Length: 346
Ligand code: DAH
Image 1: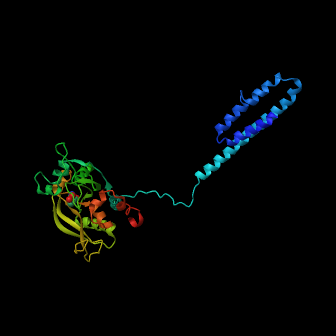
Image 2 (image 1 turned 30 degrees about the horizontal axis):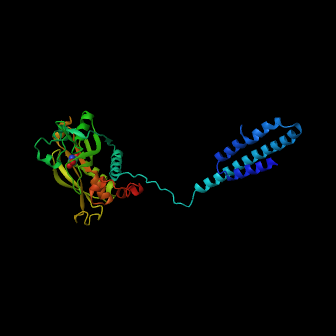
Image 3 (image 1 turned 90 degrees about the vertical axis):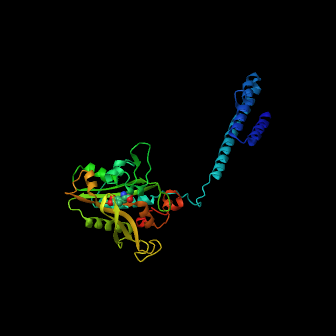
């Protein structure tokens, strides 16, 4: 009987179909509005009554069998697709993980935070000021008039606004802090920030970071300065550290000193790092010059003060033991990732 061979035909087509689209095409061809089974069912009415009944039953059975075959083929295709996806997307849990590159604090940032911590605990306030600074604040108010030879030590970057420079030191913050305090006592500030000089070699870069400290009060003396510097030296380079003040000259301090700490490498016995001297110079300091006090609105007969300025890159070089300061600004991950993990204060 013809319906049996139709079913075989449908089954063979379904077996050959490999996608949902192909199965759908088969369904339309047989069961759609113009499908062969549909048309045959429609033609029943033209048959003599005795044939109509058995033919109708056969066609209906065929339709049901075709529908069942179609949906089971669709099920099978879906299962195949799922298996294929599982194989394709299999997770191999034994693969090594992706380790993200975690950022680190820059060595200069670590040193800055360390120093700021020390001074905040001693009751200093932190102040900040402009990097494009006037000649008045950067030089003149600090007792460095035009043509003063000390200006040569701080070869400046000028900007195209007359009377302005990129600040060569954080010392102008001394004047700005005194002005802000408006004669009140004590003045006890630190100011950390970038400074700029036309310098470029293994121990100098055109942009570096200084920290300035200024204390003004009644009866401030060299002993206060020395005590503060000893604390700083020990916080930076360890509790055994000693300091030494050597007479020096800065226009804005009188007397002035250059300050050394015992070499963090050999603890004073002499090595390559300290050129066999046992000491490393780390900062400039002194008692605030009367002219500077006056320029800040204070009376040098009533008050006195000390100040110092520290280069943080140099501190980082000593603390973390590397010998080319330019490494700090080349952004080489291999260098930078060695520091700032926060262990042992590194
Ligand atoms: N401003 C000086 C410099 O950049 C460093 C300095 C020396 C700062 C002595 C001070 C100081 O406050 O008293 O070379």
